[in-house]
Length: 298
Image (tube, rainbow, N blue to C red; front, side, top):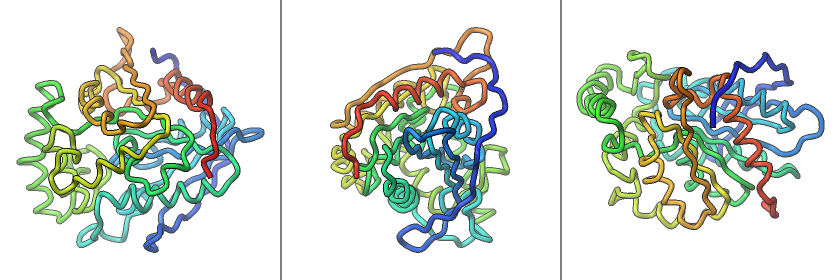
């Protein structure tokens, strides 16, 4: 796979909506309407600390390809943040079990196949959804196990320093994960920081956490076709990190693929999958999703 030229500006109908999770938390989302007759609904499950606006160009492109697209900011992040993150209580698991579950419930009411494109955390979330059986097919970019030991040595050193020294100091100062101080993403609640830091200490993420043994059968229950794609230059989710996590979906039909960055192009890294020049990757993802056989997911 190879990235090409920038995509042209695409104009599609977009509507800001609110989605209420089953515990009453109100989330901000955007719906992009398919051009022409819709071929399905597509939910974009973004990465940790990545606002939904980052996925706008991809959402517009997918809408042009005939899909209704929904992007969402999880509780405590982006446009779904409370007035203050200090003192805001939540679990990292809420994003999967409550927020994305509510989005799946909303889209699943419509008489169209429901597809999923995940980025990083968006590939983790599938197995924790209480309603993953509503999904027709899932395609993920840059999903890995989070453990520094899977990363290139230089990146591993930085990540270990980040978790052991830099971020604890920032959290102690701010009371939440204020990584915008480092220019690394949107600020996140304390609960996300605590969970994420703990699980990144295990080589297979929470599958190795003694307190999280209950997640293994949840992932084993997923039988939706899933594609796990990563770039060979992704420092946070290189192929071996991807493989360490994806094996948790042991009963799902899996497609595993590596992107080889083209010589002379700028690195893809962990975020380049959704830059406008990555249209070929988008075509691959949408073509793969639409090619999957659709069974009754209602």
